[in-house]
Length: 364
Image: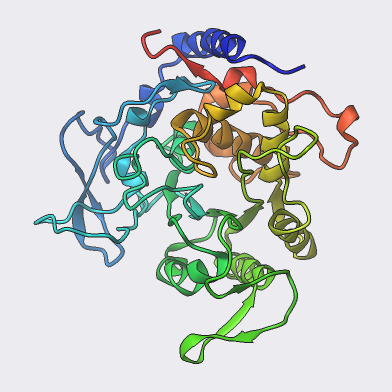
């Protein structure tokens, strides 16, 4: 049975209001300094150590970005510390087109890193202001973790492939990963740019004497190099686009990028979350107009769509044999059920829990 947009909104409002009455979101996501002191709202920034150990002023939160409340926490963009998405404020602020990467807010804590493309972190800032209305799931994901226990750092960069990220952004961050960290990675939305299809060992000569490898080869490198740091890799398949087949169901990528991610993770005995299938199943249970509201130009999601995807990541983590993030959640995460076992036939799986992930009235 498909759920209409109106029913969707009402059910989500009731669920999120009940959760928020018990525990305000702001209390779980307040920015902190290196010493752990709260940063006053509107203070402009917080001093953190950058990648070279130099104190820099990082942005605090997304107070200028208006979004609806969404999900089981009733999350808004303003609840997310901006320094989890972008790096230090330039002084003076130059015109720039490149991403300034964020760093952990407390070096003493373990870190959950997210890497991928624009469906994980959109635009230059990753903060909704330079790609208006578009959000990757790496922004709201922060809200589900207790900042007193763990850093969450979104290092995804729009337009990247597994190849371009590995040869570029990964090289600049891999030495920041430490024992006990978690690296959640999702690629596949973009193709080419040094990435060959498939998961084999075939190669191709690239520009400037470089060698291009397959999608699977790069995923194997992320897994191996994360493990070498005594950290835990979690491979995700790409999120689905807002496109349907002749049967009316959301198109999957099980025979291409999603399947390549699954097969590579299985071969390497790495944790895997099939976001492509889990999210598509949620969309299939909804009226198409409700699904449309979750996008801001497919494959990019709206804030509410990003929250749906972030909660799917959480449910996928909870379904793993050992959840590497289990010690760091805010209390409300207990209300998010573990993802269904996709090895079971679809008819034997529980219905996806879509209503609690829908937007609520911002004035509620």
